[in-house]
Image (tube, rainbow, N blue to C red; front, side, top):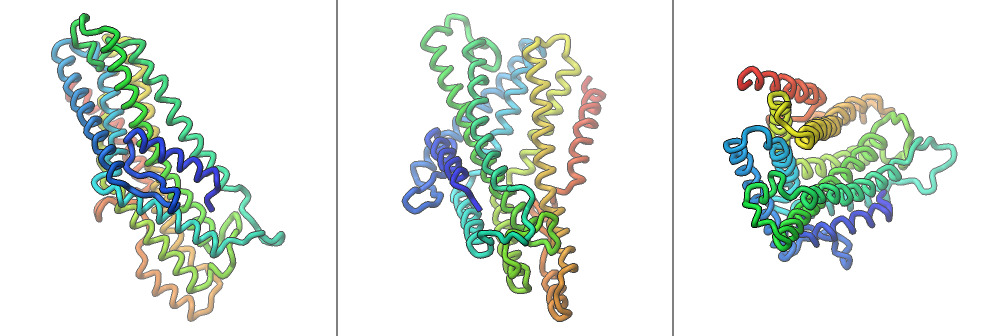
Length: 389
């Protein structure tokens, strides 16, 4: 199920991320699994503290500039602050127990490997309908493209400091000109470049784990466990027998619950940060358009667009889990089983809670949440203008 290219991308990503201290998990080549060492945890906790100090510093800079300079120089600071806060959710994804993330990733890799070895047809008979497209090729290209983008985008972002070191929220914007010399210029430049590359690497590690789970969801749940697959099957027909189907579904259900419990603590904070960031950027743009320079306007517009787009994609993707989970249980009534087996299936369904990305027992991501989120952005922007403008 997982190709050599995918494992190559995963190993390189984990190695580089761990080298920068942005991830506590790393690949153990001897045992061929993901582990967490004491040294990797210490490096990651130091990086987490540095990122938290940077967030506190940028928050203080926003307050200082608002009081002393007004809104003319605050645009970039707000965009950078909320962007860093959103990326800090990736850091929070490994907290408080990075061992859980390593265990979850190992479980996903083992589940995919065992499923492929037990049920895949190789070679696929010519008279058997097969999927029209190879999702594995798309999957490995997505992972490779994201990693390449994750390490090329920070390059031009870090260049902003070397080109304009006196732009807020950089410290030279608040210090006297005498503090800007060759030593301090390159020292702060190296620190900013490190933080930008490290937080981008941390985000890419979390994204690859999410994409890996999405690949499992697409291949196992959508393509192979449905009784009437549109694209055909690449597994043995015995998989869709009574005992095998229920066993495979229960295994995937346990894996999904484990993944949900590992990352559920970052869903609501992530939505709050993205929503508040977009609202703040919209408010600053609408109320201080004439006082902002071109760079501030462009960065605020870019962050608003990226924030809304990224979280909309996240909500749409996670809502498919709930949609496919309900369709999966409903589709079993079309199974060509005997009357006794259908009776057993109905009893089994009563013990199955539809899959979904949940936070505790009070929030489940559904397709309606996408419309609610976009509606909240537009309504919140105009309410802020009426209340504060």
